[in-house]
Structures are given as structure tokens and as C-alpha cells.
Image 1 (cartoon, helix red, strand yellow):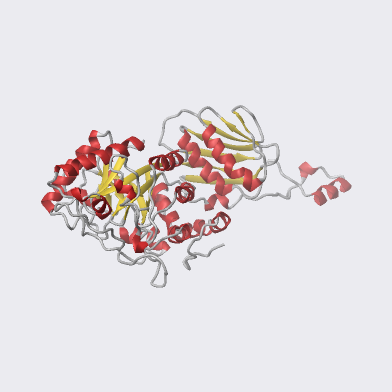
Image 2: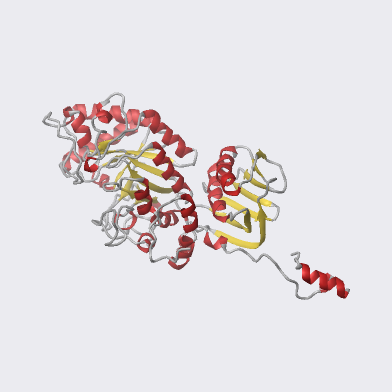
Length: 503
């Protein structure tokens, strides 16, 4: 490795007539950076070298075939933070470039390799989503205008790394949802589960049943303003997420959690009487009328329109807390609705109570319990245990926001469990991944969402991405502490847990 001598040392050597190459103890500059030990989520492997790359006014971003969208995303991040023009050029430039290259090789989706030396940065992946993941790692390595030298080889543990946002209890605008998406993807979250309907609000315009949005969407918890997305607005959210390699899974909760729909269309009740609009927080009191045929015509229309708007493979049909539906009716209903979803070319995702029915092949059960209850092992499972992964739970008994019915969840609680072994009756091969739900019964603003999500969201993200072998609370604390300056710069209102020595 070439050595770098200080000016004073060189001057002394020249004065003394000594050849620099003969010096036994050279002065070495730029020790390896610690930044590679602070990447979050932890990568499969990372190694720091001496030196680094400086982004200057001549630096370019070179994009190989299929990489232009990722290059645009990277430029949009680095131009404001570095003040450099960073033009995007075709692949092939050598030196002083950040090169994004797809090599076409097989391997896990989202795998990537990142290499940094004094000449530039190279991110190589088999697919564009891998390049995007590599860009999120690069973001954490850039300090001012420099990137420390080193390399990262990485791939995700689970393909499903999700976050749920409840826009039914309180409505959040398109811009607010898109901001949350941007906060999520920097930690390699790959799925946004949108809870679109509940007793307190229906948030999507359904053209064939317009009163769902006009009436059912007019309210929110506590009498706060309601709202709903037009189909164009919902499509904009889906496209925004897709541009960041995130899949949107929309949820229409049923057969319970439907008071907003029943208030809009009383023919969906068994007695034909519309209940009043609801702004409380109790659950389990509403139900679609299972014996009525109009119920299934309604759902066929709703699911059909939603499927046409949603390019992702899954639709979430809820299925939780259906206390006002008999068990026999619940089984009849869920089995029939699964067929409707399949008829519209989608797969079913549902809360883990779907195991009481007969899950179709490919159905994913989302476990939200707290007692390791039985889940149908034949289905894929996403883990969202409420006492570990629910971001609306209070951190401690002094937290001014959130709830505590499942647990008080500090950062270590959210981090210190293994999704692969959490359910003893479910083989690790059936675990699709993890999801961090954020319910909004008493969360009204983006700042409140952020305060409850961060820093625990980063803990769940690491459980989803990083190899189980890297799981270590003491190391995670260091990686998490390193995120604080980034969050402050982004204006993220995070909870300053005393478990972490924040920077």
C-alpha cells in the first residue's frame, strides 16, 4: 500500500539527504473509518479500508442499463446534501464516479455489493432493487463530501420487511404518506401495508359504491376531520412506493371493523338499519351480514376496483376481532371472500385468525398476537406480535402518546427477538418476514407518527434484513446511535430512549 508522508517529514528527509523509500516507520494518514461498523440494518459483511473518495464538482453518477431510476433517486439525495451537480452519465466512465451497475447474475433479490476506493464508488447488483438497497447503505457512509473506503456484501434475510400505517382511525394526506415511505425505505423496508378501512373511516373512493368515501370517510376518531383518497391519489401513493421498490398491500378489514361501510350502506346490515357514524376506539361490535348475497356483490365490486388499482400480488382482507360474527359465519365468510380475491387475480393476506377458516394455497397469515397462538403452518406467516412490533404501544408508562394494552415496548424489546423461531409450531421456512404496524387511534400528526415509529422501526427493519448471526444488542445500540444526526437533519421527531447513548 502506498504510504503518505507529512510535509514536515519529507522536508526533513530531503534536507538530510535520505531516500524516502528507506524510512522504516512512515507516517500513515486516513485510518479505516468506523462508519462500516455503523451501517443499519447490519449487512452480511462489511470491511473498511484506509482512505476514501471525495465527491467534487466533477464527480458523476454513471448508470448502466436499467439503473437510471435508481441514479435519479441517488442524485436527488446527494445533490442537496453535498452541493455538487452530480450529472448522470451512461455507464463506462472510469474514475471520479459513483457507478451503478447490474451484472445480470442470479442470487437473492436485493443483493448488492458496494466498493469504495480513492477513484470512486461502485454498487453492483443483479437487479435494480439491489442497487436501490445499496444506495441506502451508501447514504449512511457519505459524510460531507467524502465516502470512506471499504466494501460491503449484502442481501436480505427476509423478502417481506413491512410497515403498516393505519389511515382509517386518522386520515393522513398523500404527501404525509409519501414522507413516511421515504423514512421507511432508507432502512430497506420493502412493504407498505395500508389499513384503509375501519369502523371510524373508509379512506378510498370506490366508484361503484361512492357513499363509502363520501359518508364513511367523513369521520375519524374523536370527531377529528376525516378524508379519503381518490383513486388517482391512491394510485399516486402506489406509484411513489414502487419508484422506491416498495410494494403496497391495501387492507379492507372485514367482516368486522366495518361500521363506516354500514353507516354508508344500510343494506349491508342484517336488519337494513344504518348505524350512526362512529368516532370511538372500541372494537368488535360491527359485522357485515354474512347470509345476504348483496354482501358478496359489494365485496366483489370493492375488491375488483382495488385489485385494478394495485399492481402488487396481495390484498389484505383483515379478519381480526370479528366478535360480532359467529364462528360458523366467520368461516363461511372468509372462505368465500378468499375466492373473490383469487377471482380478481390476487393472493390473500389476512390477520392470523384466517387459520380458523380454510386458507387458500398462497395465503399469508399475519400474526399479531402476544401469546404464540397457533397459526396455520401450511400458510406463509408474517410476524407482527403486538407486544414486540406494534409501534403504537407506549415506550414506558410516561409516554404521552400511544396505548399499552399489549405491552410497554422499549427499543430493546422491539429488537431482542428472532422472527425465525418466534412461533414454535411454524417452521422458519414458512416465515415470510416481519411487519411493524402503526395504529392511529390517538396519533393525529406526522410528528406523532415519527415519535412512535423511531427508533423502534429501525429495530424491526434490522430483524427483517440482517442475518440472524449479526444479532447483537450491544452492537445494534452503536448503529442506532449513529442514526440520530441523520434523523435530526431530516426533521424526524424521534423518541430519545435512555437505552441508547445518542450522538
